Amino acid sequence: MSIKIACEYADAEIASQPSIWAQVADFAPSSLHLLPEKGEKVAVVGCGSSWFMSMAYASLREAAGHGDTDVYVGSEMNYERKYDKIVSISRSGTTTEVVKMLEKTKIPSVMLTSVHGSPVTKHATHSIVMPFADEKSVLQTRWATAALGLLRMHLGFDLRSIIKDAQEALTCDLGDLVNVQQITFLGRGWTIGLAQEAALKTRESSQFWAEAYPALDYRHGPLSISEPGRAVWAFGEIPDDLIRDIKKTGALFESSTLDPMAHLIKAHRVAIAIAKKRGLDADNPRGLSRSIILDK
Image (cartoon, rainbow, N blue to C red):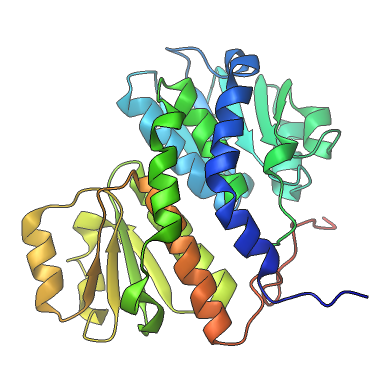
C-alpha cells in the first residue's frame, strides 16, 4: 500500500501547466466556435477559482471590444437581466449553484468543465470538456489556468507565446516570499481576478493570511497592514508612485515581467511551499472538498 506524500498532486499539477497549456492550444480549434460571438451580451458565471477566472475573462472580453460582459458568482446570477449567452466554468461539473443556475435560465449557455457527462453538461446548451486538465488535488491550479487560457485564445491571444513564461515561473527562486507572515495581492483590469485567485490559493492550501484588491484601491485602507515581514504582490503593471508607497511600508514587493497568468504559477508554488512549511497537505485543505454539492 503506497503512502500519499503531502501536496504530491498539487506539486505535479502545478508543474504540468506548460504542457497543459500546449494541449489547450491544440484542443482550442475544435471548441472556440461555441463561445460568444463578438457583439453578444454575455454573463460569465463560476464559483471559487472559476469565479475569479470568470472575472479575468469578462475584463479581457470587454477590453478587446467583444461586447458587454458581466460576471457573477453562481449563487448571485441576475435572472432579470437579458443576455445573449452565458459562459460558465466548473471543474467538476457538479457545483450546485452552477447546476441550479443552468436549470433556471433559458438563455443559451456554454459550459467549460473537465468531466464528460457531469450534471452541468446535461443542462448547458453546449459543453467544452477538457479532461486532460482535470486534477486529483482538491486545490485548483492547472484547471483554472487551462480554462482561462482557452478563453484568452478565443479573444485572439496566442497561448503558446507564454509557455516559456510558465516554464520560467516553475524554476525561478521563491526567495523570502515563503517566509513572510502575510501577502496582499494586487491587480488591475483582468489581473484583479488573478490577484483574487492567488489569495484564495494561499488561504486554501496553507491557512495563511492573504488578501487581494484592485491595485489603486490599496491606498484606501489595505496599505495599513503592510509592514516589514509581510509582502505585497502585483500582477501586471502598477504605477511607479504606488510601488514607492508600498516600499515605504517596509513590506517585500513582488512583481514580474512574465505574463500575469504565468506569474500566477509562482503564486501557486509559494502557496504550496508555505503549506509544506506548516506541515499541511494542500491536496486536502481543511474543510474543503473537490466540489461543493449542496442538499438544497
